[in-house]
Image 1 (cartoon, helix red, strand yellow):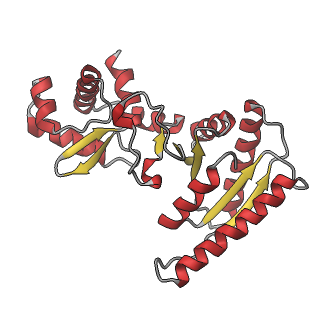
Image 2 (tube, helix red, strand yellow):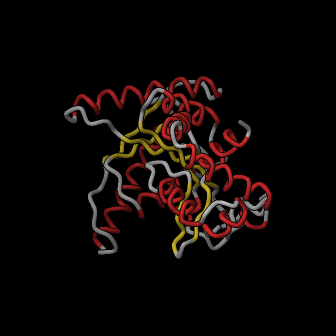
Image 3 (cartoon, one colour):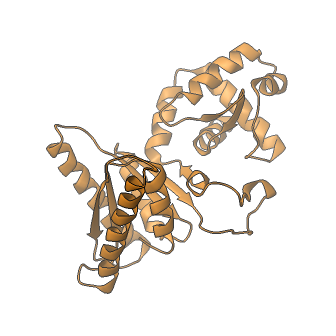
Amino acid sequence: MHASIGVAAIAHLEEKEYDRVIMIHPWSKGGSENTNAEHLRKHFIRRLVDISLEGKKTYNIPKIEIIAMDCSQKPLEIATNFEYSIKRDADEYYKSQNHVKPEYHVLLVEESPSGYLIGAMSISGDGHDINCLIGSIGYDIRKPTVGEFKPDENLVESFQKIPLLGHIQDANIWLKNKSGVRNVLVNIFNWYNDGGNWEKSFKTIEISDFSGLSQPLVSSHVSDMVNLRNPLIESLGKHQYRITRLGRSIGSNHSNN
């Protein structure tokens, strides 16, 4: 709970459904920050109840809880305490829900302390099902490329998924005995690398022309990479595709091998 994250949190809650929401911060339970977090928690609930009553959307109001980590705001302190808090929560959930493992979505804004991302990386590397989404609030014109500035984009959809250690490990294991898929991924990565616009979409015929591989082969392997739990390629509809950030990371590693 830092900076403008509250705006992003309620936007996600209004559009998506979650079983639980954990509002986590580094301050103490007795501090004004925790009191304000409690006010925000109640505001979220009232907002969701109003939406449900207005008939805009019907869903179960998630359980919203607050965790005060009571630690300093140094990156490694936040990382260590965040990791401990989430792993403890996962263990308690697993025991109380007949050995069902929870899935976590960590929502960050660009101003969020780096400790949360460091902690999420470590949690993911230990095999927990965790995803991390990051975005910005407002119309920030300081973007490196024209294609990345989209003032009319939906706030929720503007948040991007960050590749975590567990995602990279899973992808490399999946690709280990799939030389054909690896070859297509590397060619897609090189096609993007040559063009320099990572937001651009592609058609499989373009990758076929670029690589010399047959279009049916490219299409088959692209479909495989789209259908993963953590996709390397995303489908945009109408036979248009785009490499994901995870795909960029894995493609870069294999293109250098």
